[in-house]
Image (cartoon, rainbow, N blue to C red):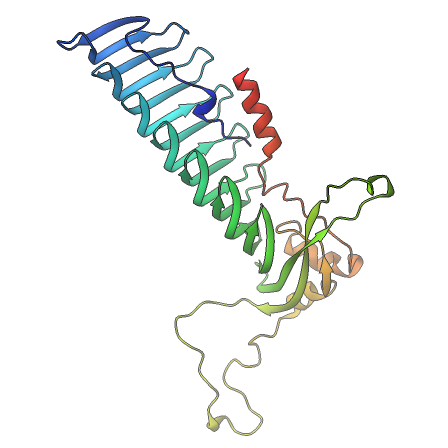
Amino acid sequence: MSDLGSEELEEEGENDIGEYEGARNEAGERHGRGKARLPNGDTYEGNYEFGKRHGQGTYKFKNGARYIGEYVRNKKHGQGTFIYPDGSRYEGEWANDQRHGHGVYYYINNDTYTGEWFTHQRHGQGTYLYAETGSKYVGTWVNGQQEGAAELIHLNHRYQGKFLNKNPVGPGKYIFDVGCEQHGEYRLTDMERGEEEEEEELVTVVPKWKATKITELALWTPALPKEPTSTDGPGQEGPGAESAGEPGEEAQALLEGFEGETDMRPGDEDADVLREESREYDQEEFRYDMDEGNINSEEEETRQSDLQD
């Protein structure tokens, strides 16, 4: 979903133009509480200081959008809420007319992003919740894209790893609620193309998952594991050695059919389904396209250009 910024909805500078009723200072400048109707049809009601919007105020655009929040010398700055023409809204911090700091964006499809913003884009640590599935991406964002260390959480399993250009890349692991982890790595490969596409120069790169092993859940502990003692006797191992690193029956069922490479994306298959179908599909490839995990940039540009029109 797009996050529509105020760069498409410019507030008109006043400079004592348009209709105004309210307080003024000795120099005749708008100063204090007042109401203004600008020549372009926008309206503002709130505080002024030396002729500029300054302090708390409400700016309403003629297209239905509006901003309720703090201003500093005509710029949105501080805490504020911007409601866009399509009904989406942003609640949070602003700096120099841009979303900057911590804030929450509510999309028209009920998705939400909660986290850090930098110069109008999702940047830093943030959580994107997909309303339709209940899945969520928790991790790092760079210039509006999912990039860096993150966790993609689903109903009964999750994926932990790194993302680059909105795709998982490198080492990672799937953690299933049945009590096991599948370790492996994502490798970027060229997508197979038909004969009619061979002359095209553009190549679509897809991440391919290569599973390496299944283990029991690794519970983090601040203490280092104890070394086996000599009192265990010849051929014996320390306490818990039987299960350490050895998957249970359910984990073994997950492992079958996932030795080697597959095009499996984080969250595509539930753990129960993996157990049921691992034998049937064995090496079948699953395409990774991050339907749940990516924002459609083309949709953003289209909707933003519509607003500009």
